[in-house]
Structures are given as C-alpha cells and as structure tokens.
Length: 361
Image (tube, rainbow, N blue to C red):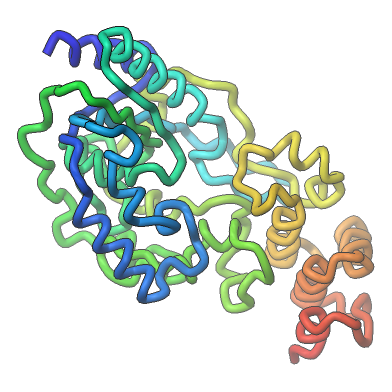
C-alpha cells in the first residue's frame, strides 16, 4: 500500500485523478466485443484497438509477467469560449489543448518510481497497446455509459486515460462501479447521425468523430450533419446529464495547459499551406499526416455555414474547384452547389469522383 500511495501522490502531482489498479489479465469481454463489432462492420476501416484485438486485450504482450495495470485519468473539462462572429469550425473539447503530453509525463513518472523499486513498468497512452477504458472499468474508476465513454461518478466523462503495466503486485479495486445511467438515453437520441446503435455500441460508419479522420470522400449522407465540426464530436457527452451537472471550471487535479481556440476560422484554414496546417493542427490525427483531409472537412463545413454571396467564400470555392486534388475538387463542388453557387461549377471533370458530384441533381 505504501508503494500505491506513492503512485497516487505522483499522479496527483501531475494532475492525474482518479487513479485505479486492475489485475493484469486478459480482457476477455473487450476482446469478444472487438472481434464481434469488427466482424459486423461496425469498426469500418478504423484501426487503433481494432487492428489487433488479441494484442490490445493482453497486457502480458507489453510486460511479460505483468501483475497489475495502473490506470490514470486527466480531466479536460473546460468552459467553451464564446463563438466568434466569423465563419468558424468547432473543435472537440479534448483537442483544444494537448492533454496527452502531461498525461504521459505523469505516467512516465509513475513508471520511473516503480522501476526504482526494481519492478518492470511501461507507460502507454493514446495507442493500441491496451484497451484503457476496459482497464479503468475493472479498476473501479467508472462505468460504461450508453455512449461507450467511461463515466466517473460525480465527474462525468471529460477525461483522457492512460495505463502503466507493471510486474509489481499492487492492491486492486474491490469492485467495479455500478451502472449510473439507468433509463437515460439522451446520448442515443442526441447523436446527430444515429451512430449509437445500441447502448454502448458505436457504428463507426456513422460516427462524425471517426468520419472526420477517415480518408477518402466524406459520405454525402452525413455532410449536413457534420455541421461546423472540424475535429471530433462532443454531442453524446454534451447531452449527458452527468456531464451537464459538472462545473465547467478546470479540475484542481488537472492544471491548465496551453490553450488553443475551440474555434478555427474556416476561410483562414483553407488559405493555409501544408506546413502551416501541420504547425497549427499537427496534434490532430491526420491520415498519413496529409492536410488534405482537414481541407476536405473544412470545405464541407464551408458548404454548411458559409454565405454564398460573400466574395471571399466565392474566391475560396473557385480556388478549390481548380485544385489539382480531385478529393478537394469533389467537396468544393458540393459546397458550391449547397451555397447556391451553380455559376461556379464546371460542366465536367476527368475524375470520376468529381464528375459524380457534378451529376448530382
């Protein structure tokens, strides 16, 4: 217990709270679900923990002879800043600032303390090594909400999670946390695309948080639903009664980190070169580190919130309708048509995906 007390103290010093411990064991339930949902197509082309479910549910792959898995949470609860008057895109709350960097620092400090005692210990966060939400559930930190997020009693789901796998034997949680959702289904009803197909089950093919990261043509049936979201989607957390009762001020356990705006000016983003996009938004997951996917999303947003008669909007549409990238031309066609700028559209295009957009009635 003295060693666990040290672990909790180190975690608190780094703004990590709550902290729990689960026994190192195969995550059987998570493994079954990952394979079942992958087989049903619910994972779409998503990789992460779906890439190798046998590995991401087996802590012994990471640390041979593992005995315990420490799991720690860092709050990213923040009050949303007032929406600017400009045409702006919304960023999901967890991405306003880099909360994973301080989370990793805290996890590394915990691992260092354990190694100083002669134990093996390795820290992981935001990768496919272990299904951290399942570990957090087993460690008694919270319960799984119907939106598949882990809900901490009295503190909601505004947390990022990380783990330290170790061969130290540490006291574990006496029991898991009881389900606190009851009959509430606000997250299911509040999802803009109906992506929560059953309590705790997400269809990635409909989930906006995944679709903004997925490469390729953005599905036409979900473009309007994307609204102004440039990265991530908070809707299923925003409507959750547990989260709505939370004080939007930062938790004392999670000191402020350098803030970035919750809003990104769309026209400004579409005017940036590749290097500038990566410099400003490189923390976001971009497939192959390619800024074209941010521009694609921004063009959909422009079609949703732009004003077709605005000269700057028209100039941006013209520039992207002439882009050498067919993916961007295709989405510029959709945005121009949505904004009533049929006068800007070309008669044809050599690329099938762009031509398909032009032929939409």
